[in-house]
Length: 388
Image (cartoon, rainbow, N blue to C red):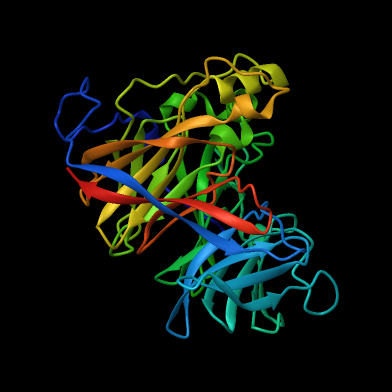
């Protein structure tokens, strides 16, 4: 079936941020909350599992709060008792045979222990598997997309991560990613979210890049792949709105999944951002863009405190590409209330070394993956919100 194209998509590229206090120069907001760091969260790893897992998910299995992760080495999903921090289960995935889920699994969604969705990024396929890894259903997402030649709404390259998870809302599968191939399109609009409706077998392409990214035909050439093109989101309390985080934008975009309406709201750091397009996409310019500039790298809803946390990385003034220790960036957490008003800010004491995509929220707080000195554990900084 043809893709459902959003007719108002160009408008969102032009609209400016809304500031709740109507003072565009005021980046600080209200100082109601801060964060405090508590004990690290650690999950044990065996000899066949490394810290470099590319996807994690919090889930409820048989009434128990669980933490799960994908293990590329054994091509399986490991399930932990979250509170006890112990391994309790694993789901084996297959690369060959009738139950193969492709060779490039990137992201999963555990709905129940016998209903797990896995995305293969090379084939663009969604597989539903049971606890034994048997394939129950296949969906060829790529074949659901039809694009015109001139005025093109470009489907995203899907790349699920912990901060851009696979999810299902009201019969719609959410797949998040980055700008795709514009082919011969003359006036492309690059979207970042693909919605697949199970009942109607229809794909919708939503959440285009904001104005700061410039002409969409140049996005792939002017912005780093995972530093700025890859986008992130969370859902609100009622799971009726997507809150979308674009790394180059100090605003967040609120997309109403029921009405299709957009709103852009300021949610930036108190110090003005250092963000600009690269003159040309060379390795040197993209390295400079990443290490020398601000990036917003995730937005997370805390259902236990009814708050949102936006993670931002700050520019490095002095770094050496040959010295890994100099490449770790300072980070801060921007705190928003349930109405997306800025109510606090917190500077994370530790520098982050590229593991921030595996950030998630639990009843214990905001957990940010960090490098563990002990390869036998996956380690997370844990932060709790505190009222001032």
